[in-house]
Figure 1 (spheres, rainbow, N blue to C red):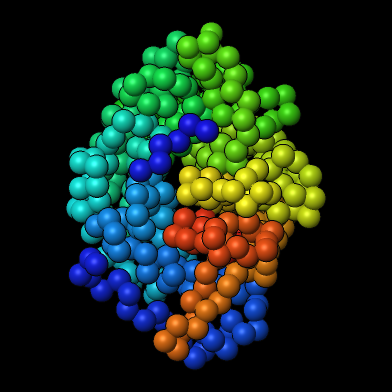
Figure 2 (figure 1 turned 90 degrees about the vertical axis):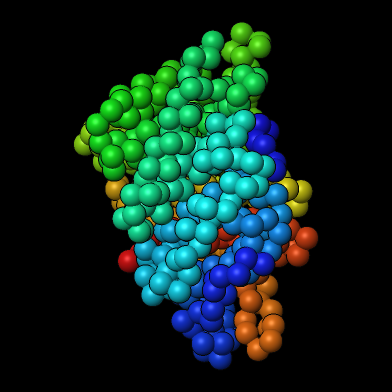
Length: 376
């Protein structure tokens, strides 16, 4: 698995718009279809982990994962503007304070996938705020990522030490380039996005079964690393949605649809026989804070595809997963008279308190965002 694993005095934890008593009444009914209220409680719990250890980040040593959480929160704030109005100072704080972790100035470090998560997160924040500061930050990150082009296998490197060519760094780069083409225009954004998309599908990373593998071993004649993870399937769906918006080319949607159908198929390597998204480590309750984030990235990409190319089977899949995590992987705890919604790693359940943390909260918020957006 090729991924790097690495009290702020602001009013983030103001009471949410749902009063404690009404929230307890709601949660006592365990209504898995009230996606907005479920997302409020899930976001509340995620925000409790903000700035507790690393200033401007969530939890401890959750660098790239925090970029995912920022994406999830920016999306939810768009879906629930009233909730966002309470907590939206988190974005400016993160922008100014988070790079102090690891001395990652401008959110740049030694891994292009880490940078890709943050670049795409700032596009989500820009979409919510319309503040060009965040668009410019995404551009700065993109300008560093393009320095990773030129591997012997094609595409961009996973890391600046040039050890591996990962599907995830390339998927994120393609999505970011296409996203900038849609928001900033000009330059080579679209041309680079299309070129990397074409490489992605000719490289051997995507199998004849329409499942994305992990990457290519550059020190072994670009041999395939055949490991399968959920997030590799989802990020490229988000890239397809951005490319379609930029070009109007239906081919991107058709290609993405084949991938989405393969990964959502019941009984596949990624989906249980009951239709619930499953990481391999979920089966043994052994996911760490890297793998616990993967399903959130997957469902985020599927949401983006569903919004530009609605399909009933993907809608059913999205809502089934949002309902399953609420029915089977949730612990509601009463703390000081307020309900705290704690979601675990395995959305099919059962809830495991040893696999419940800021990362599983962020992934769950992505799932609830997807259900809320797709059913509005």
